[in-house]
Length: 343
Image (cartoon, rainbow, N blue to C red; front, side, top):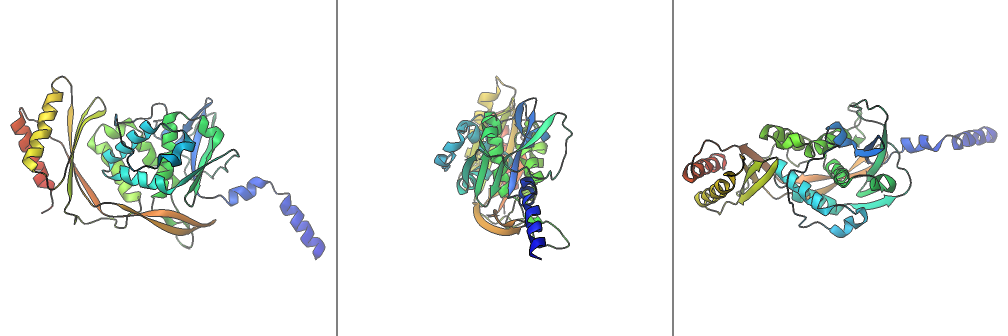
């Protein structure tokens, strides 16, 4: 009996390490593709945005971000601020939430190769392309493979960070619906959202922007799946776009006079629209302040952590057009604000 057990123990020791590693895969993995000796975040490759990752906002803010935590990553902070601004374009208020999510996590550079996760949703057939694990998240720590990270362009480093943050905010679902004892989050959904945030097509129309907004709304782990509009604070975000950039952004709160706000934003619009071919996007947002609540769930490899987004938000979008002067413009803006405001 002892002899047989010894043989079994020896046979287990002879199994290649990769078998154990793939079985005990920890957390979510951010992946890259190596194509023609260039490294691209997978999310952007699947969105056809990897060659020219799009940053729609020309400027952004990092207010509230613990930059000391990110020193190890040597990122382009200006690019990160611009992408946080893009989050606010897609889902107003989300930029601040992403900042809070980044602050929750710690970041570790590792020299060893990270275990490659089994492909959950192979969408593309890429010839002569290698799929590589660039990062993985377990609990609130994110390990990044140093050699891969240093070969990523600045925009792709931002994309990898965004992927990890998006993933941590996703809903939790059963691994096996018939026997729901283990839970997971979907890398495929995280890649779809991240890819959309870096795709120029998302920002070309309210319809395309709404697709990514809806995906976030359906996929993120909110306390309420369809929140009621109960908060009295009304934020109006009025945006003017030109040549793919948002060049005019204004916010209005409930205690501001609607007529004065409308007149002011229309005056600014008319001043800058004369020499430029600009379009008008009007977004009304009614939301509460969001808070992050830490949650745990049992994965196949043990306990994992994520977040629930506590708070309500809802956004309406509309366009303003066919006006000739400041009065007709201001009248339309005022009507839209009144139309979409809660009773």
